[in-house]
Amino acid sequence: MIISSMEIGSQEELLQELAKEGYELTQATLSRDLKQMKVAKAATTNGNYVYVLPNDTMYKRTIDVQSVSEMLMQNGFKSIDFSGNMAVIKTRPGYASSLAYDIDNREFSDVIGTIAGDDTILLVFRDGYSRNDIKQSLSLIIPNINK
Image (cartoon, rainbow, N blue to C red; front, side):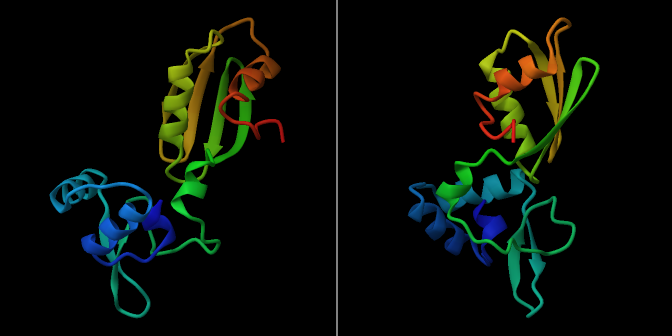
């Protein structure tokens, strides 16, 4: 979230921003984590290099700047669409896997399971449950699902 919302050009800067949010880690751990998350560096329009997430096909920054704490309070939910006993949930980029994880760990009796990409979740639910039943269950994790 820090990388998405700020222009971070070094691991030192990223460590400082993480510390502001209460995360303490070593440079070695950060380096390993960045590699595992496939974070890369890309040139900005003024020629500086900053970290970008792998789903940023072109260098871009969000216009509305939020703190990491504010971003963590959001679940990234955008929409839900149903077909048969399946639903497709659209999220902001990067939010799908954590939202799917939350859904799976709630062990809802009406949800069989999820498959998540970067910004899309396929949710399969049991026969005999309505779309409203599913939305009602998911509202425990996604408060804005009925808007």
